[in-house]
Structures are given as C-alpha cells and as structure tokens.
Length: 92
Image 1 (tube, one colour):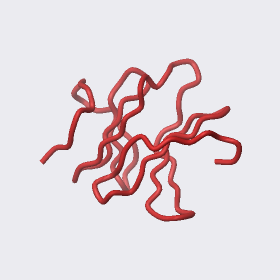
Image 2 (spheres, one colour; image 1 turned 180 degrees about the vertical axis):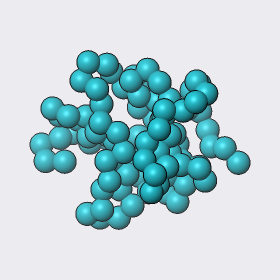
Image 3 (cartoon, helix red, strand yellow; image 1 turned 90 degrees about the vertical axis):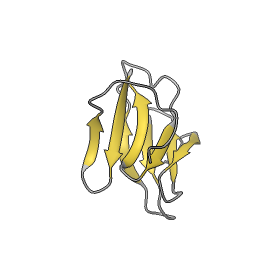
Image 4 (tube, one colour; image 1 turned 120 degrees about the vertical axis):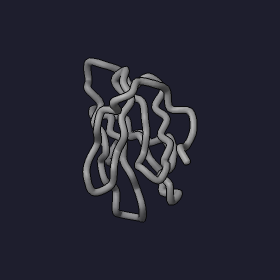
C-alpha cells in the first residue's frame, strides 16, 4: 500500500504471504501473486491487533485481531471463529 510500512505476518496453505500494512488504515492482505493483493481484514482503529500472526491450513487463514480469532476462507470471506483460542499451528 502506498506510504505504508508492510510486514509479512504469515502464509496461506499454498505459501502465499499474508502481509500487514500500517499507516492510517491497518489492513491484512493475502498476496498470491504480484499485483493480486486481496484485503482480508481491516483493523478497527479503536482496538489493536495484538500481535498479528497468520497461519494457513486447508480450511483457510487463521489470525488473531481485535482481541478475537478469525478465519479467512477464500471465496467466502472473513469470519469470527466460533471457538476462542490462540493461533499456534496448522490443522490437519
């Protein structure tokens, strides 16, 4: 993103990076190829990410943000995970 400081915070199941861009808007992006970034989460400006970490498995990309756990499912969107927990590793 123009004028943003960006950091790789994880990878999807196929190895595409998940990138957090800073600046006025903090956004998590899935970047499967050059010029093909897809925003998967925009930070609520009133609540912090915590330590963004994204881990991909065959179900989607799991990450903690806004003091909750979310899963991004390609082609469907980003959802609040129904079971609270921490993002620590991939599922089988």
